[in-house]
Length: 560
Image (spheres, rainbow, N blue to C red):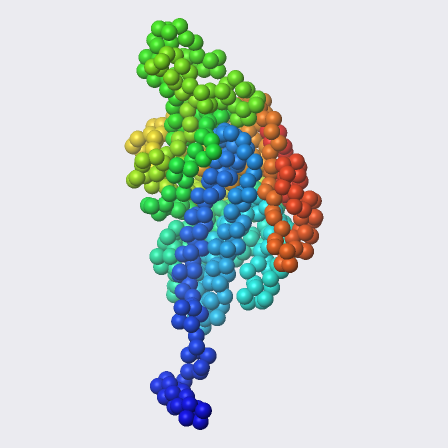
C-alpha cells in the first residue's frame, strides 16, 4: 500500500508539472465529449432549421387533413384530431427555444457582450415566430418562466395567459428592432448559420415588424386600441415591415422534402367549389398553380354525344375553364356531387373521366411520385401577408393621423401582385404548373383590373379579406387564424360565398397535462382560467371553449 501511494503521488505530481500547475483535477476529469462552451452559430442554426423541418408531420396531420379543410381552401375525408397534432408545441420547447435562450445566456457571460447586440436581438424574433404559432392553437403556455431549469432551477414555469404573451412578444420585438436599428459597426454575426437572411439586419427588422402586425390582427377583437397602437408603431418605424421580395422569410434547402407521397395519406385532397369558382370567375393566375384539371380534354363533347351521355348538373359544359371543378367542402351537404371526388364518370369502357381534379400535389410536394429534382420553397412570412394587413387596417380607418405610405387600394394591389409572383416562384422551383411565363406583368395587370378584383367602393373590405384568404393557401396556420378572427368567407355572400357546412369545427387544440409530478398545478390552473374543461379532447369543448384572442370573434361564416 505504501509503494502504491508513493507511485500514485508521483503520477499526480508528474501530471501537475506537465500542465504547469495551472489546471485543477476537475478539468482533468471533464468528459471531452461534453460541450461546456457551445458554439453560438451552431445553436442558432439548429433552432432555425427546426422552425421548418418538423413541418412534415404538421403538413400531413394538421394542414392538409384539418386546418385547410376547416378554412375551406381544400376538402378531404373528415378525420378526428389525432394524437399526432400539435407538434408545434413540442418543437418550440425541445428544438427552438432552448438554444435561443442559451445563446442569450452565453452572450451575457462574455466580456465582448456589446458586440453580440444584434445576435441577441435576432434570437427574440426567431423565438416569437414559433411561439406565436404555438399559442394560436393552444392559448396559455409557459414563456416568461420557460427554459429556466438549467439557470434558475425553475422546473414548474407558470402558464402565461395570451394577453401576457402578446404584450411580452410585442415588447421583445420592439427591443429587438431598436437594437438592430443601431449602428452595425463592430457587430458580430451568425455567419452561414443565418441561412434565411444571411445576417441582413434590415430584413430581420422587417420580419419583426410584420410579426407585430400578426399580433395586432389577433389583438383586434380583444382590444382594438391595442391593435391600432401597434399598427401605428410599425408604420412609423423607419425600416417598416416586409415590403419587398428579398425580406420575405423563406426556407430554401434543395433536398428538403417534407411531404412527398404522404400528400395522399389517408385520403386525396380536392378543391372546394367556393375557391375554384371564384378563381375561375376572376381568371386568377393562381388557379392552375393551386389545383389540377380534370379529364375533360379535347373532343370530350363529341364523345358524350357519341355515347349519349350527359355530365352531372354541377358542370357547365360550355364553361371555358370546365377542366377546373370543385365540390362541397362538407361532403354531407351535397352527397350527389361529392360522389365524384373518388368516382369516375364512365362514358364507355375506354373513357373513364375524373370530373373533379386534385389539389396541385407537386406544388405542395415537389418530390411527389417519381419527381427527383423539384425544390420546396416555404415562404413562412411574406410581403403579401404584410400588405393585406396594412390594407385591412387602413380600410377600417386605423391609419388616421400618420403616414401609411399608401392607400388601402395601393397596399391591396401590392399584396395581390406579390402573392401571385411568390406563388409562381414556388411553382417554378417545384417544377410544377405555373400561372404565367415571363414577367407576368400582363397577367397580373389584367387581374388587378378585373371588375371582381378592383376596388369598387362597395365591398372593399371583403375584397381585401378574400385576397388575404387566397394568399394563405400555403400558410395553413395563418389561414385558420384568419377565418377564426374575421368570419370570412361569409355565408351567402354575393361576392365570395362560403360553402355550406354541418360539422362542428374545433377552434383550438387540446393541451395535454404534463406528466404527473411535474407542472400539473400550473397546467390545471391555466386551463380553468381560460374556461376550458381540463383534459377534454372532445370537439364540443374545442369548438365552444375559445382562446382569449378568439372569444369575441364571429362564428365561422358570420363575418361583419
